[in-house]
Length: 404
Image (tube, rainbow, N blue to C red; front, side):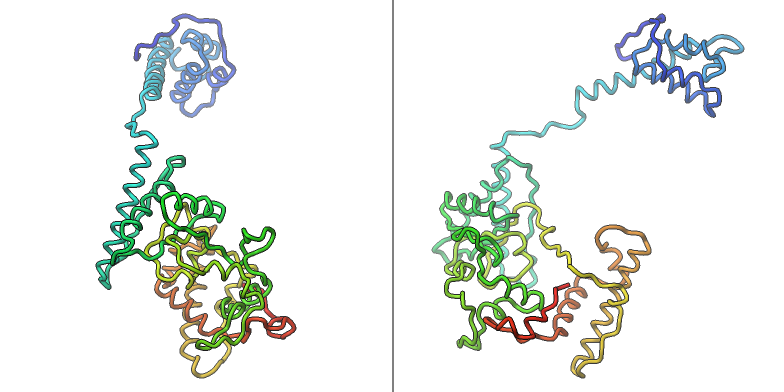
């Protein structure tokens, strides 16, 4: 009995729950209900004598078979009670002595381990850069760290040692990209790098608030940005500056005082960017030494369109175009057909939520095909001739559709 003790006689206590169990006359498995009654009585603090009194009161219930042809009820109660007692003791001991090893340590130890892990990644990245092997895969390391350890501080320290230790040598690092969830966090990390002797700078998107001009955005012509985005045209040449060779053909009227453009001047040791920047090209960064991503980032790559497409629209044949586009259109139609097949499969299977990878693979799609398909769709798109400073009255600007 695991060292526990119990009262032998009746304490006079009763329980509606236990009595309801012992009073059942139609239980398909009387032995099982008998044991259920013992467990319920044990949990509610009754004694074996209390249970016996209730069961004798209901001889037609689950205890009836222990009363005929002779009374062996108390023996069966004691036997079941001992099993329940032993199980309760096991649970009590398990609660007092966890089955897992205590691997916890101090915050300083954890921070030291984080710093060592970051150093291992930096060394692997450096080795990859120096190898110059075309087939070599760039190292990708992941680190799970609980909050409060100081992982950002440890990472900034390790990066600073890496950069400062190679500065002025043939191994002088290129700029490091440090991605964070928000610009506000980026400002804090900017100061942290400064403590360790590095110049870090937060790179802000055109629509981000301008810290030097409260209440204004980094770009002074957000309307033009939205028009070009809806048309699927490159923002820099459509809204900021359009060049032909070294000659400037068109330029935004705000270009000379633009905060967005001004931040591109110079090359800091570390560019701090929001996670969204990981999903778009930015020539202002130049060559990047390595990328460090703080916190989860995959959600920032999701885009919820304002307008969707039906499966019939995806599968619809493309209108006849120029002869030189025939092969391109054939590829696009084949890719769209596979996409529709995968989406239909998901619908037929009743899979809810986002599109499941397994359904796309079953339809014949893979990462390589999807990458080629996206490029093909962009090649088929007709280019809209818009340029910086273009009058809003121009039909090409007025009819800009919302991007789906």
